[in-house]
Length: 69
View 1 (spheres, rainbow, N blue to C red):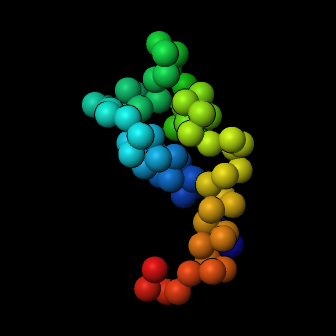
View 2 (cartoon, rainbow, N blue to C red):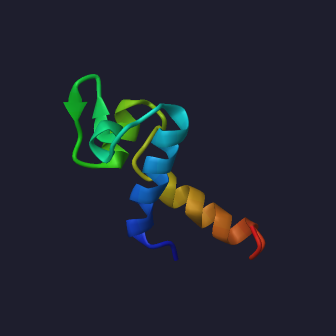
């Protein structure tokens, strides 16, 4: 089982890889709107298609990856 709290770390990493950010607030800001979560910001940036994408990715990784990965 993947803890739901890991999702925000996944979303900020995704945002950071796709655009330059200078602060946590900057990472949550899209077109002048500051979202309350990184997940909402990633959705606004269209980096993900739905809010369950992080959970799905972690579940896939735990099933199909080796411990070293």
